[in-house]
Structure formats: C-alpha cells, structure tokens
Image (tube, rainbow, N blue to C red; front, side):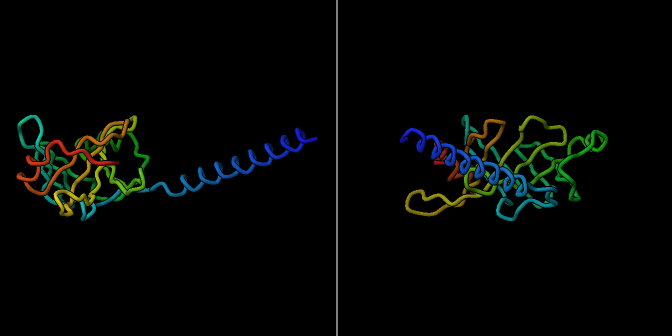
Length: 170
C-alpha cells in the first residue's frame, strides 16, 4: 500500500516539474530579442584598456562603431530581424550586428559579424567591481561559444596595467 502511494506521489511530482520546465522554455523563447540594436548601449561607450602580454589593448566603443585594437567595424544602421539573408550578409561584410542577451543573471550585448555562426562573437557588459576599497566601472568581455570571461577592461591605462591579472567572479 505504501509503495502504491509513493509511486502516485512520484508521478505527480514529475508532472509538476515537467510543467515547470515547459513553462520556463516558453518564457525564454518569448524573451529573446527579435531585432538588432541600432546603437551600442551608453554604458559600453567610451575608451577601455586592457593590459596583456606586456602591451596595451584599446577598445573604443561609440554609438555606431567598435574599434578593437585597430580593427574597426560599424554597427548596422537600421534595426534588422535576427534572421538575415545571405544576400544581406554579402552586401556589407564588415558590418556588425548587436543585440541584447540575458545570461548569468546579467544583461549583455552580443556583437557578431554578419558572417558569424555557431555562437561565436563577443559579449560585453559594464559591471561595477570593488577594487582597493573603491567601486570601479569595468567592461567585462566574453567571447566564443564557451562563454567564459576573457578579461576585463578599464577606463585608464594605469588601472589596466595595475590590475592586469584581476579575476572576477561571474
């Protein structure tokens, strides 16, 4: 008799958990952006510095372009649907598309080229980190399909060199 009730209880629990998984998948689909961004978010804009391999790396983000250590590309000027045709991709091979993404309890901006596939691209967000008793704005950078933090960028060269080996918790 006890075994029968345990089986019934297990079936009811699995149904409740299964319903929760289906509901959360539907919410995730509904939350996905449908169009690209026309400009980069204000929090990301500015000049950021990283110090790695005994040299500075400068990342400049303006409203309409990204300059990563000499490689400059412009964001597409109009909002586009996320599904872009091959003809559109060939028309402007150096243009970027950007769109908001929620990941790891944060809001990121995903930046990819027109011809990028398989989840590759850059993910950027501004965070506040307490360093040396002060709260500093940092640009957290992730890339690739593994989504691991590649590093952080600072608003000055001095801070970038001083905290070049900083590890943040994400």
